[in-house]
Image (cartoon, rainbow, N blue to C red; front, top):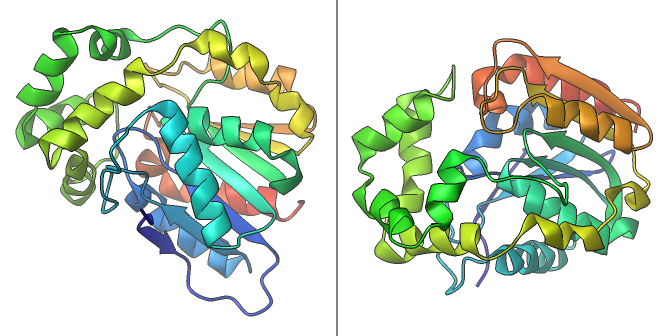
Length: 260
């Protein structure tokens, strides 16, 4: 089932293509500022809503593998070719797996507030989502007011429009169950089969300084383990770094694109 997506304004003779993958429970709306910046810099950009998020329909499976497959299908359908891959949160766990499987398609990477380490540990909310019964209570009991309060506790910049867009992930019982499928469908140990360094692409590690879910230590670890990296820590930003500090993020990505 085709994914709904946002894209930058058309660019004549673009320098390349940027593929942006959102995290949980976001949608392509999180990239709205970056899409404009990328176009101004002479690049074409596209940002899909992953299945069951934003305006993309739930596709019958919300597993980690199903999302990787959806990204692969979207890339082929849109004939994107080589891309600069930009990922955040679960978009990193999904997109970086895809990058490892298709290194020839990756020109560069921008990695934000995520993890891709085989010895990783689930944070408290994730552990709750993975627990039978407790996870169902969370997704079934979350209304718009509670959703807003939960996300604003880990963000310094989410407005009502953003929360409305992201709450679409709770728009049906199937979408809510898809969230549990995602969290319960894999283990960090599976990443032992993936070596992100072998992708061989330059990377910008762009991170919110005060993220309680993906602490800034993860940013330093990416920078240490990957070749040819640039590290930018965004002060004043929490987990939702592109919502919290859009101007700083856009400036950092634009500067990075100038050298790739």
